[in-house]
Length: 433
Ligand code: URA
Image 1 (cartoon, rainbow, N blue to C red):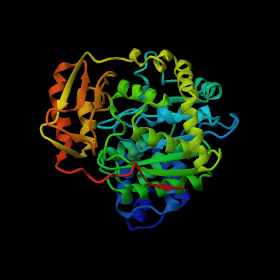
Image 2: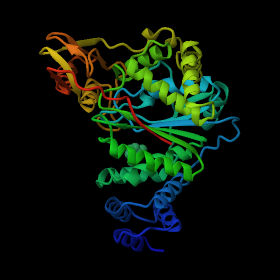
Image 3: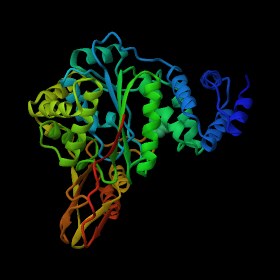
Image 4: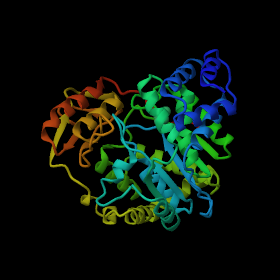
């Protein structure tokens, strides 16, 4: 087999076989197939696409390229979730403890933030002492003892995706549906859970800007997971407006704790309960309605918050934050951003809000940049709200005063204020499963 023949076949729109895809991925990881041939193949895929079978084979070949977690020694259903990312998306911090408090084990590998989107690891690391770099043994032990562990992905997991993603990033081939689907699903499959819930976001702050694109990606990923024998479902959820009111690491942890206490913002609470219900449903805890009630009870009884605190403690963090979020890092500087006119907030550019938070220090422009745990934004007004000139739209936080001016400019530019309220947008567009 020769890589150049396989590139030619894809260039002509042919379907590669499972063996041919295996050959490409194995050869690439071993260094036998060079970057320039993989780039040409990725570009051919970009223009010609992949069949469902090919996408499934590519996903499996990538998942098998490194270590695969074996959770089979842990009894019961292990459930995982993945969000395609957005602004203010701290759902994992709420859903994970809810689901784990109901006996479904959550063994979750999460990522860091980049650009306008945040990352679960950064958020958790804002809790003093919290460790996300764990050994496999620590990870397994915490899943077994507490029911949930959230850690960083090790280098040994899916090396093919790490290499291919870096290549796609510099060859304009990131936005290929089969390559995105296989990249995400290879990591999920390597993590070894039995059930996987996908939260595919759509809107101005999401990777998939339209509902149609989000649905296509969700359907493709659900099929891949089913091909691999997993229980799968996907929700298409709104990311036209930041989720909840907090953007930025410690601020988001605080909002997640409030939500676990039943005191979170309405939009965020509803999304969390629906996602948790869907995870419980995949884990066969009852009908969707029953699972939703179970999720509500887990919050009302305080059991979910208790599991959150136990996870924090097991991962080296100060579990007192669950009762006293004031122990989280607090920014020394703040600034209120005010409305310049009367009217209604008709739209928000969620990506713009995320970029404003990044500029304040909450996110990174480049992978190696540090993040400020205390930086971020609390939104006081969101799409649909009425405002009067001089009302506070949002409060910005940072410990670097010089960042406030640019953060305020970007945030203000993200708000659209008009004379009439915008029609309501649903939080959840569709369920695919
Ligand atoms: N996220 C991933 O993990 N992979 C992609 O290709 C795109 C987004």
